[in-house]
Structures are given as structure tokens and as C-alpha cells.
Length: 103
Image (tube, rainbow, N blue to C red; front, side, top):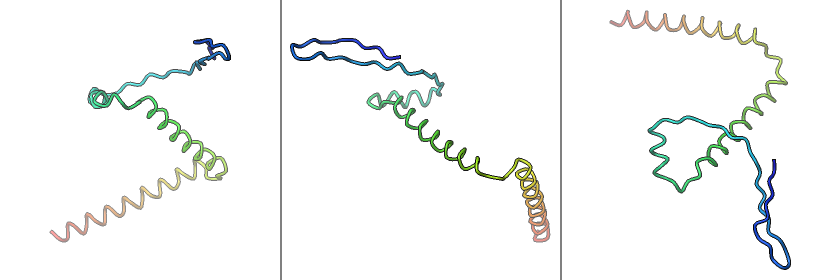
């Protein structure tokens, strides 16, 4: 929603300010972070948050795009994850056995 309001009228032109209504989000931060932010009132923290959100969303869009072309299924991920767990478990067992032999 745009709200237009005339703020000045001069003989040759009118000056308008256009307000663009944007959605608001509320976030909770810790007291510690709040105190540190208050030490720097010159910084526009909302702008920093907006830029960070845009960067993260751009990265997620890229990931979604890459994944949409992938033939890798959930079943593939589960199978590979189980194999990794099995291999790591065997590796840890071997390391523990070596440690017992050394002591």
C-alpha cells in the first residue's frame, strides 16, 4: 500500500513524499545483544538484518534451484547416511582397540 502526502507546494512544482507500507516482523534478541547494540545507535540495525535476510534467502534460492535438478532422493540420503554411520562406528572401534593395546 502506498500513501502519498503533499508536504510542500512551490510556485513551479509540488514536493511529495511516498510512504511504502512494508510488512513487519518481530524478533527476540538476548539482553546481552541488546546492550551491545545500544552502544552503537548510529548503526541501522534493521537495515543490517534486512541485508542478512536477503543474503540468506538468495543462498536458499540457489540451493533450491540446484536441488530441483538433482536426482538424489531421500532414500539415497538415508542409505548413504547409514553407510557413513557404519563406517565411522567401525573406525572408532579400531581407534579404541589401538588405544587399549598402547596402555
